Length: 452
Ligand code: BGC
Image (tube, rainbow, N blue to C red; front, top):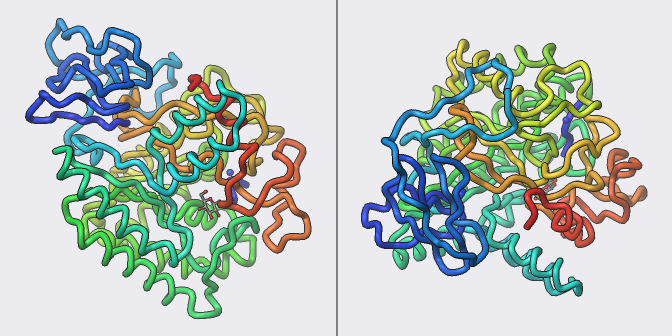
């Protein structure tokens, strides 16, 4: 991937029958909360603020939240464009139209298997115990090759069974990532389809196969991040021949994807790079124009909910102070970027909501340059997925990049070697993009913030 020039719990929001305990990372209290105030075994109901208590791993008593004392109220949120005055998330009421509302996130079996295998390789007992916890944190499953699509059917079927056995509606998080001439401004994640060789038709077939799987399980909700880096590359990297050559195919491919996935009710967020990429003032307006044009050109599909930012990147949602590498960009973190982008989109007819990836954003000020995106050394797992985002523009803080999967190989002789993966702030001995990078995973665990 190229990343520059850059719950959840789900919230078992509102189980109608409230005797069930909230799941790990589920909501278990807060003003206006009427669901269960106790957590499943192994989790403790922890008050995060007056509006939100969450089942976090651990077994310390007490396991239920004190009943709220004041009446439900609309939570304050910062106005678009206003500076954040505090690093702490402000409490927000979770709106009913947020696709995550009322659903449990189905944990990615693919990632759970990767983490389970990784845990067996760790000998230090404390690190091992922390690493094991990662398997229970919701993550996205990437469909980066067409050959993986049949497994989507398996996961949907498992999620469907789980909904039946637990009585809790399930939501599956996926990344749609197989455009022809993928990763046009970088080398590390070049994909399987080429425009010159029937790539667009192959991509449509890939989308059709996803649609066919989703259609079989109408009760499982699917949330999808659409094509990381693709449209952002069209905003800033048309000087790269592969990107200008891919422009039409990317637009047609993404349009096809959102129109078709819309027919089966997949909630979609188009990837929007991050603050250090499209957040620069010169890039914001063209970015908003491109996203809005594409959205409206596709017929403003009902299930296109908005944009996803910081996917696989390292930016804070709300930085306590600007990292020196962000100098010159007033949108120095994701909340500033989102607050600047949202009104520009709205004014063009795209009232977007956002997902923000914080999976690897636990440690700040670790990059030499903002454009460094590959296996950045010293990174740690970040804020846990939650609907308590502190902003009415943000539907959920999520983990999109499965931490431990590599960004790109550091082998200079590899076909997909990208120089960013050989920089001094990139971890050495890195395998191919998407492959498991054990030592990097262990560092993410050790550096997790909040700690695991
Ligand atoms: C890789 C994909 C992988 C994804 C998630 C990308 O950089 O190219 O193969 O699925 O990251 O780890």
